[in-house]
Length: 128
Image (cartoon, rainbow, N blue to C red; front, side):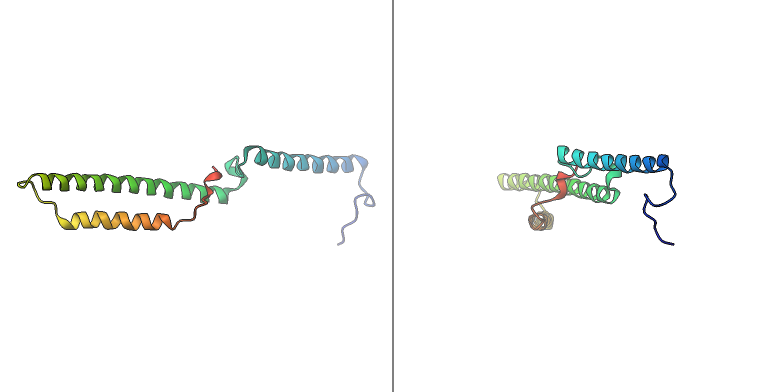
């Protein structure tokens, strides 16, 4: 079965007009989407624009939040251990700090800093 051009086929003028109006309307909707993307500077304005990209963005947001939480926990532990070490050196009768705990905290901080410095500088944060 071959496709017959619209002007040759047996289609009423009303049907041709309806098809043309539908095509124009779809073109206007597509143009509006592009104009919104240009004006906002964001590729995603609604979750329905690109569900796959939205999933990637949400995954990255969760990972960044977990990294921020991990970093603040490391800062807290490092500060706590530093304060305990200062207290230990100030008072000879204070409780000794277990060396393995300090070593673990320092090693974890070094590994985390190294892993985050190797991350690419441009992240998809712009598409929010």
